[in-house]
Length: 609
Image (cartoon, rainbow, N blue to C red):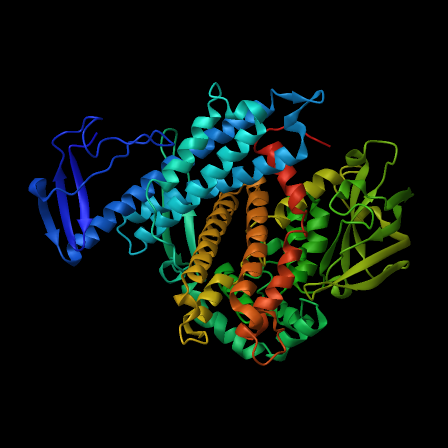
């Protein structure tokens, strides 16, 4: 179709004129899988014009390819999105064994995975377009990321939707085969530059991205990287240097208790816990940015505050659904450091199906008598309360007969037993034998616990919850790979297969970052994070599990060395990360539960249980 073709030969940028573009002409259109406008184009110097030579010519050509990657990546996102729409429509019409196949769990889960990946592809494309408009140094790499991720996502989506069509999927009467062809052919129409870790955009700690939608008919986004905590970092570092003892990190690792009581007392004393809270509930007036910078610095040094994370989730839940008495009783106590709250949701026989709780709460005058057992009550050994989900009406459907209680851990009849985990963290089983609590310990209405639970889970799965920001394993891996030597003297990063695997991890980390920032943007607008929080949590934790496994493969024998081994790379963080990554896909709702939430609330597929 083109009259002119730009070609890079060596360091010469040529412009070729095509005198005859007919299908029978030499080098004419080539029949191909996706019906793409492809042609062989022999270089005929008689019809060539040299536009430029040298580095400027190479830069111009590469910039053009970068623009092609960006635009094609955006087109592939659109292709994948339409294929997903076709798939959702089809599974809601086609029946097998007397029921809609859209109720099959395996189909719903795979469609949910595709929906998350497509959201990531869209955000990558927007970010790459913005980077090119701003003429940023990372523009070319962002475009490559957008193209690579969109190409893989579009083909995977079209392939699975074709499969869901059964035999009809490969008949020419159904359109999905066209999407299947085009997705594959577009991805292979040009072999993109490999995404190497050395060229991945720097994901700087403390940077942020503001994303937002404009008015109707328009979209406004700003992906500018900035460190909004920069003005607080020096003070935060000084606070940590003055108060934190290095041995606390090893103690958390040794004990598996990811909360340090002495540190928590200091954070409360200096008003850091109470930052960003109203004065009437005990707010300290400490700048929230300084508080965030302190927690960021603590995380950088390997100190966790899991007990405060769960407490913060419950406090935000109380803020949304609690009475004024609840707010004045529990929030100030927690901000003073006098209260920590663990989560008492799961039970031995129900796991993620928290609505199947068998722990009972029976009313006795102005009190409730609680009996039962909870599992995975992490940090309960340090907590003053457990946020307990209990059954108050056994005769009604399970979600309708639940209530939430704040149970003091010094109550008669309360007991605790430690459980040690693969990731090194200690969790607990907690027991309730005729534990009595006043009616004022109930949060929400009688039998209204499921609504309270929903608010709490939204905060737990939100990318804006305390402790959501982890360090970049890929960044640490790339730093190791640049200096680690193979027996032949080359670095690990010199191996193209290792470099490609690290680059693909970097793409996933960028998608995770963008999904998290979208979630935070909703919170900053004052909205409760909804299904977006589940999408972020699912993608982030499953990507972390894939990455930690790949990292051990790249490291080889040294990858399995535990943190106490002298030669362990990155002080054993990779081996420890491999064990810990499994936990992320389970806490706060397993990946399977999150997929069902996304299928039902995002894709509007029917409930299958």
